[in-house]
Image 1 (spheres, rainbow, N blue to C red):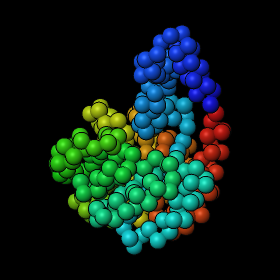
Image 2 (cartoon, one colour):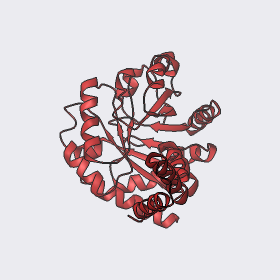
Image 3 (cartoon, rainbow, N blue to C red):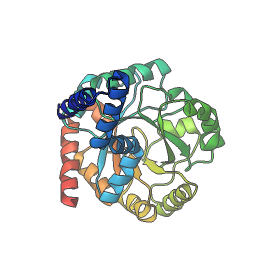
Length: 298
């Protein structure tokens, strides 16, 4: 309101002063307004505040985050409306959307529903090049660095690159590492790769360090959907102590206490999927735990 009043006053002064070319006056007035309120700087800051920059800033300041994983498979999103409402009310940090087996039309439908219902950032967690959609905000551009399948190390990425080059998505290069969660997961089966043994934190550390040295900007350690047990706190701590990029942890986390343990061990973002799909009410308990932890760190 104040800005509008100043703009009107400026125009009147110019016109009364004898400058009657209205278009020129309005251009000058608009320029004056931008300068007076430092809008160029505001626009610059907004442009710089990408999702990845938020992650880096959060890591440097010790802030932890919760992401809810949504699998668009129609058999697994029966609680989607309730999940969205709980996430909005309790201020979940991010939605991750994707899965090992997802049809493109289901993906877009799910993303449109999320986008129209909430302002929570939506990040694609793709299982293939078919899971790219402009209805999200960003994409984890993943390389499966824990395996030796060339298609998932670089092959699928080559196919996706020209599509992503022309998309509005923010691209976050991610070293994806499968960790044994005590059962065969869809990700391991589909990718034809063996996960890193859960009792071998040294292998996880070396793999993570290699990913960071190769220039990957984020690391995602995942026990997989339906894992019997989550990644150990020991492994998370070991990896966290040896890399500087944001660290995402997922798989096998079913309660707020486990979430707390992973964050305290060194995870920057914890992703929870199956447990919340089964019981959306967990969102309230988990977000409260994250807030409490962040307050203790501040």
